Length: 197
Image (cartoon, rainbow, N blue to C red):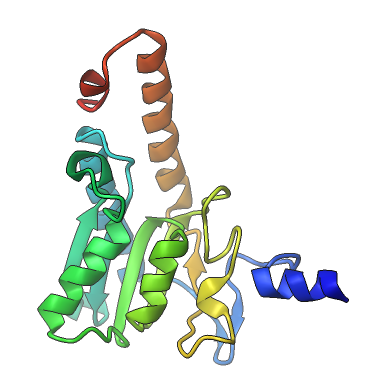
């Protein structure tokens, strides 16, 4: 009984499909989600060029051709020496400023990598309406891999994440980045050289 309670508390132990069901049927990515994920991947590539872990995020409002980007960012943690310089947090902050409201109920956040605990907390606190992500993060992911924070019934805001959108492109970008980092470390290049990727 205690084990079952702990699994529920941590969101573990349940099979999870790529598109979890919701009250209104299966949650699926839209054409706009895929287009915005392409933009997030461009941002992630920019991050890699600057020596940052290649993660990009876009917050948008609306659908189809009327969709408007309110905030977009890539990781800046290394260059800014900022522990909270995650793409999701930066994009959420920009979107809130652009919208003039901290509540992003009608907005969609698209991010190339599954959000961590810090970012998932910000997503819930900003009341983001929809979350779309590419690759899972088995070591730090807090919306599907390690935890299911965005769906926790104890919280006052919940959303069902849509995962796997352009996941292979996101994963390959991360693999290539870390492969290059490891090979540079093996050749004895300095940290400043590694940041120039």
